[in-house]
Image 1 (tube, rainbow, N blue to C red):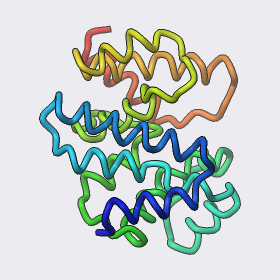
Image 2 (image 1 turned 90 degrees about the horizontal axis):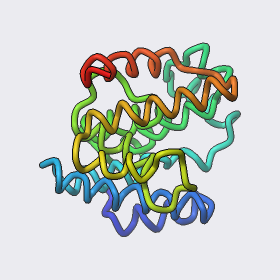
Image 3 (image 1 turned 60 degrees about the vertical axis):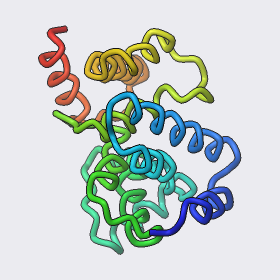
Image 4 (image 1 turned 120 degrees about the vertical axis):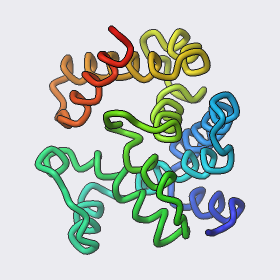
Length: 191
């Protein structure tokens, strides 16, 4: 795998400044959460650092990349190719940055939509992307940040609840996996 210093250098050239600052915020937040939840800190940091590595690509470039690399694209992703940055990012993390750990690649793949029954690393990246300190203030963010270190499942549920409310209100394309995962975490947390 490429060393962290070289990954930083590459990302700082490929991402705009705002996205790069967000990326570093996710990496450090993920590392802190990993310490709390007993997950490998280096894995969390790497997954956080690379989670948006495909954000510098345009929607057209992401769609073309998926076609070229034979990465499956759902109908929802075709109508909202921005969602593809997660799948493309996982693929780039493997082929460009040399990440071979399936847990890291899965955390990158699912950091946007999440999925049912995420493992701790997947949850950490999903949450860190939402709560990192450089994010614009979101509804109930202080409570969600506390939950990230108190009850990771409730935190995951809370993020889904707020995200779905936002998507429903703004009639954005919704990945069915997101709704299914929300239902899973409703049941898991009894909410």
